[in-house]
Image (cartoon, rainbow, N blue to C red):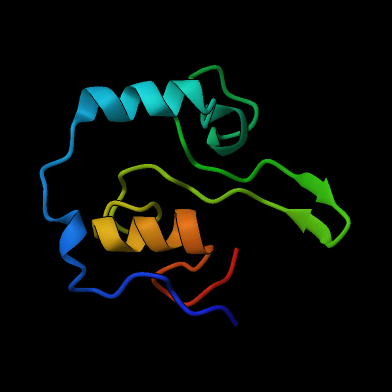
Length: 95
């Protein structure tokens, strides 16, 4: 299993986020194409679950909604960076 590239106290993540920039990045990366809940018209319902075939088997993108239980609402910025850059979730799951 891969180890997270960032530690919980990493100081480079102390700055405040910019929601407008986050929305721009979300739209530019077309994050909804994989992370939106399949079969519903609202592209911002980010429940994940779309089946994506790969040579390693079927991958289902996670729920990246702000829900603190089912989504990533309970994640820290370091948790998100580790998932996006290192492929490791806060629960130690590898993506």
